[in-house]
Amino acid sequence: MYPPEPWHLRGQMFLSVFLIPRGRLPQLPPVLGAAVRPITFGGRVAVGAAWVRYEPGGVLHYQELLSAVLVHERGRPRVSIIDIWVDSVASREGGRRLWGIPKDLADFSIDTETEPLVDATATLPGRGTPIASALVRLKGRLPGRFPVGMTVAQALGEHVRRTPVRGRAGLRTANAAWRPDPDGPLGYLAGRRPALSLAITDFWLTFGRSAGDRARSAAERARPPADRERPAS
Image: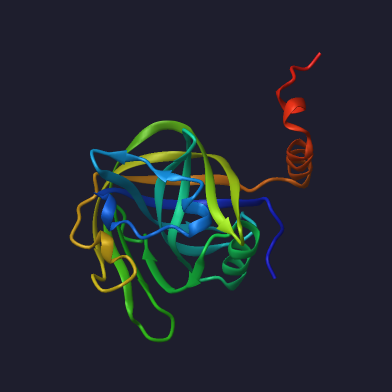
């Protein structure tokens, strides 16, 4: 029903970063909350909200709306996805079963035909209940292509699944006006202006580990701690 990991994906992302009070952040699942802590900036946490179009050329092509919080795990930066919707059953099932990403289904309109404006809307399927909309104005392109890298940490059953994401992309500056439904799941972003907005253009990403990487990681975890710390001869 869904491709095995890793997923090789291509597309466009329209990202805004919000700084919200720590107390407004939804609770992380207990097993995840025991392992990671939100990174705070003067009592506020950084939440990224993004519209994504995964395009043909990758293993799946679909649309997505997500919010994620910047956290750390014993000082190591991680990203934990709080809310996420897609318009692909294969993406939903793969995200949940492979990596613990809590994907749900939604209906999308992400109109990029009127560049430099991008008009995006997501609603709950069948009912038309709004989740959020946004109007993004694309601005200048930064020269070159830039590396993309992060580790996504999610609760998968009773464990924390840590998933590497690697790739490259172009960048454009942007302005964005977000309109989350105040009574909806993204209500904690309602009425807030982004601290930063970017377009991550023509990206390619590898999400997850190859079979060889997973085998090496399992072998490393199986080694006694003293062996892990012993330098190679």
